[in-house]
Image (tube, rainbow over the protein chains, first blue to last red):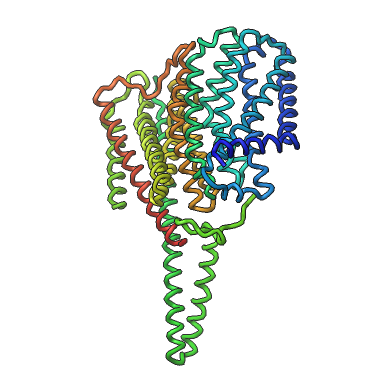
Length: 225
Length: 104
Length: 215
């Protein structure tokens, strides 16, 4: 089986499992709704305050959902005793990483689209011209989160205090991505063109490249045992 | 501007305290390890001696009881301390059969 | 060898202390509280040394699977986290009488805080995994990810604080470089780097002995 084929198989398997059970998707959707309500309760009254904190709140929602989704990414393998299967998989194990990454990315983007949609509706946001730029930023930011998140999820999969350790490891490393996405989103929602946040976009691009390359190179090491 | 010697003392004091604590922790761990390895080599010697002694001659009852006492105390201490050690050996990788079961 | 290093470190620290209080003058604008700089700056810079060593040792481990490299990374991480934590604490203690606040979110402080939490996570990962070989592998990967992340952290935080925003007026550690301040600083920096080396050497020796005892 070729490398690309193996990666696609893993991604397809994850998405198929998700489509059938919808466990993670359901959890994330309800979690997002909860976030929405909480933000409405605390910030809904004051439109100006809401507009000021909206980028941060939006990405907070994205990140918390990401933590949930990524934390569970190897759950299926763990719970159904498939971990050894991963370890014994032939060939370059980074194909598994790319497959997992693709699956996680797809899942996270779906949830983010949902959250964004809900925010637009319930907080009466006018996306308008900001949408294309926003899509670029969201895509790059999500890739950054998913890239390191998938690697760290594999590392913490069989470790004590996994649920505690995973966010502790992931969040500090992801600060550049968080900063870049929030500041870029803020500027875009204020009506600035994508060119105005070019430096943030370049940072995200650089981060994504570094994260994916390092993860592909080291995933084999993590899946040695 | 006032001198704030209190803050200076706090900074230097904190630094000294933490560094000292770390230094003492290193020394304590070294001592524990020393005791562990010494105890282990001593009891290994003793069991070797006991084997040769039993094979060669009959022993005096006083000697026997003393040896029994120290032999009993030795392995106990070892197992108590050993349970604190990590379960697996270092590099190279242990064989799959000896690997611990997957944890949740 | 380790013992000699210890004595050199002790002597250097003593010399540094004498320089900090005997030779260095009372600073004009801040008063004597500025003397905290003579531990704060060396601690932070020595921790940077520790983290560079950690990154390199992690890389060596991944390439050659050398247990010694892993022990070096482990020890360096411990001492590095301790030093950077102390650095943050002493910086905070200096900041309160000088700026009026225990903490500000300026670029340097934010970056160092992120560094602290990242490498604290490194130590937590080590502590959580029992199998020494797996711990070595995972920590090496984390060490490399963290090291590569540092420039990204630096730029993102710096841009966050400086673009479209007035730069922070208070820059900790900035000095105008008169000799009577420079020499105490350099002596203390040397002292803390030697102390780092001593702690790491002793810790590595202990780790090796522990590994041999468990074998």
